[in-house]
Image (cartoon, rainbow, N blue to C red; front, side, top):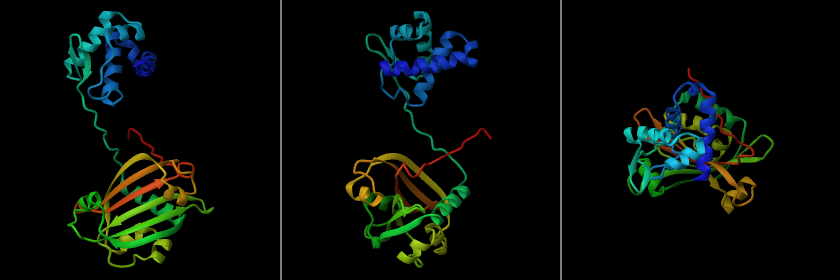
Length: 257
């Protein structure tokens, strides 16, 4: 709770230095608490700070703290029970960031063209259950599984890729994958991607992957899981990528346009 209160107090001070300084104190406090609930800082079922804690942390009156909490309760963001305190009733769900696919595909192809690609393995296999379900396959259906390691132009390995792809009929060999961007090979197989869903997280390097990326086992890697679909909405490619953050960064620029 002390760490949360310190974080909320920092947001409160920013609000007081901005346009929020012209609104009543209870509304400033309510806004800071509401934002923390809506962005998941205070998660579902978590206990909210007490009125006494709010009074001490934000140097406001008990009436101000109570009114801010009453506003949250009125919006069904918290539930209040005598003797048990207030608890969050709002379930935070991350919302995907949307952007144009054309620019992303161009960037991926350009990155591949300036990388040294080494195919570790390529084979037709029955995929794991979670991949099979995502690709909407029947038990026993085969897909192309490819493991690749990409290095920069200095020869430093920065990415480990594991991909599962359906619909491949030609031009998908070790030689071609090491000389041609994989997205171009998909197009040669009449696989035209129109949507990509990406999940970003962090993952520790296993001994095998650490060896491929020339890092210590347990090193924190940027993990990207990408699901690519065609115009009919069917997922045709599942990609799991692990990046060495010392050599690769995932940058996004967003504006209000």
